[in-house]
Image (cartoon, rainbow, N blue to C red; front, top):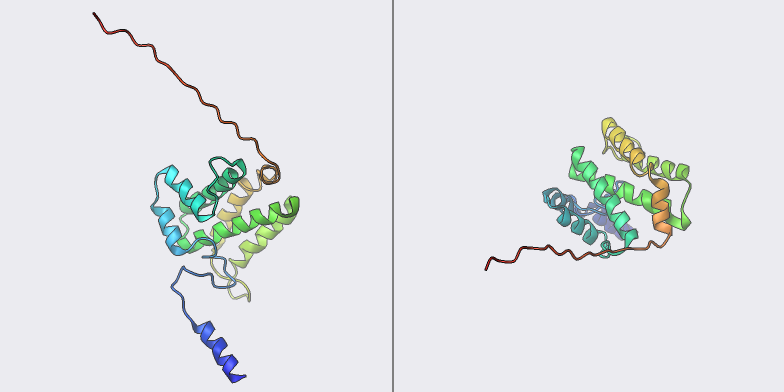
Length: 189
């Protein structure tokens, strides 16, 4: 029994480099590690940012699959929000995972009612904003919570039915190409 206890203590005391693994109950570093957040913040070209998100979230078909394109767009905007709000990489990672898990919850089993999804999201945000409460992490300040919940309600929740529709219906992808010709004058004789 003592051997098992000492092995459990060793596993708990095993330290990982900050930003590489989530530490329960926090969702920070679950989907995006510290290096990923720093890499995202260093990107400036829109195509590079989209490729970064698609690669990280295993959505390589986002250019041809409309459902994947909607998801990449959702992830792009939550990362952009976190960047504009001045979130630290840890807050950015947690916010990203909260919205990702909220989207997964909303679209599971053919879609959940908006009220259930909003309650689920509130619980995830609350889990990251309470100090001194067991099972919670003091990551987001009151103003961070206000900014983040405003963002969620004015973006994801505002377009909730569209996200459900995109996740539950096959989308036709129309690609139109046009060849343009420009008439030019003949060279002089």
